[in-house]
Length: 388
Ligand code: VNL
Image (tube, rainbow, N blue to C red):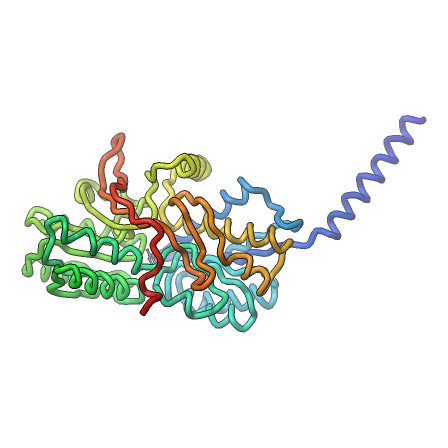
């Protein structure tokens, strides 16, 4: 009898404790908008996986609130991104918007962030000007000029004088072309031709033919994540490597997501970027192992790291503000300094953009697998585009 009374008292106690927390436990909502279908689906897949890994490792409660991750597919169409962002802000009342796989998607959403005072964490898109599109943008991916300038400093000291550039004809490609050309020219090198290909479904063939005729020392390329394999294939098919034209570019062309499937043509390609899956640090090794384990062996690329670090910035700001929103949450994101799988990382409070190392890397076989092996580090690179 006594025992039964004790048990039911315990049950009532437990139940009311549960009800208490349930009532007190509001949600901290993260609206994650990504291209989950279409030509840029790999970016969405990588970032979603990284966000889920971050939550699995750090818990689904932050600042006393239960985290709700709302993932939406924008199919990489800017009008869809914008509409989804509006719905997430108005109907779901999200604390923060995040994701943004491509520059036009981020730019379409920036006015929503400004009007609703909702922090907007850009985890993928990389055109320099995005952080200036709204005071609520915080970027955890990278800025194209960071990578472009670093390689333009390396190139002339390594036997490359004459270069042709080939870029996707939109924001990040135009940044890559402009900043690479300016810096290489300043360094005494020469860009003899600038070629631009359509962002969607580019046919590289006619452009590569032109490059062959021009016979530069190197071809400098930017194409968005996911498009590098097609470029490599056509580069090899046209015998460009055999003709002695070196392929160089931003790390987007030797994307870790698909690098292994590119084959021999990718071997030896030199690029500049902020992240390689083979970055040599204990933290990165742990990150890569956990990511691969949780995703059937999928190797994380720079998009995954932008997503993972974006979650870190959001979580820490949520802790500081006890699950806050608006300006308080935004301010708590500014100035964060931490170790990322990419290396040291800083969110500049003035620009809200990322400051990080840029590495010069060469594709090499490691244990039978192709990796971007970092061999030179330019520390703490700010976006050179912000001084213009
Ligand atoms: C962008 C920049 C997109 C770099 C990318 O892949 C990338 C962008 C989708 O700003 O649109 O690798």
